[in-house]
Image (cartoon, rainbow, N blue to C red; front, side, top):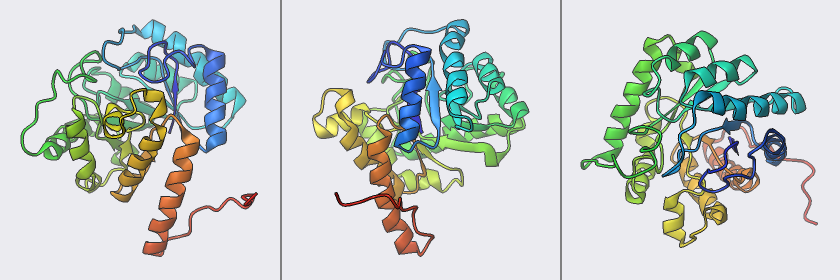
Length: 280
């Protein structure tokens, strides 16, 4: 999943796609790098981010989604939003997935909107509202953080299925860096098999996160892509199959190689080998 932030204040790339034309260009670039999904968002959840009302969020994301689909018909678009009004309009213009970082906690109408649209949904673990969830305000856990994340994700699944969303349409995101310290995120990554064992595809959003910076000593978020790719490979080996990233090209290469090893060990079908690759 290639990230297209149509915001002025995202934590690592705020402003670079803050116009429909820039967002479209960025999305097309990510598709060329090998993205399978473009995740378009118009509200930052970084600590201290400014809340965005639905009208402003719609002004940001809808032209970007429409433009991307005009330029790349058939592209798979995910809308990153916690607002049912934004999800409704995005689905109307062609988005196929709703990525709700609140796990459908914050807008009671969201689950019904997605059920009626029969779209895919990503349910992420987080706590608190949009301004709190990327902070440590609610980052209090007991001895089994993975168990607590699983229990709270189960609540999101219950909300979704109670509204009529099919289980086959649901993917789960453990929410690395959301209501979690770096130590918490490392523990969740270490126990990722338990989340994958729930039977849903697992989405990993480790790209450029604070945990990567603390492990590598890289202070600038935009320079953490190599460390992010390393973490993605670990997540793949532990069962994750979907990766929300900024640098699609680097992650695509790293994950393709890791998948080749996994497929060979399991005697699965070989990974797709691009025939134009040379050693020049």
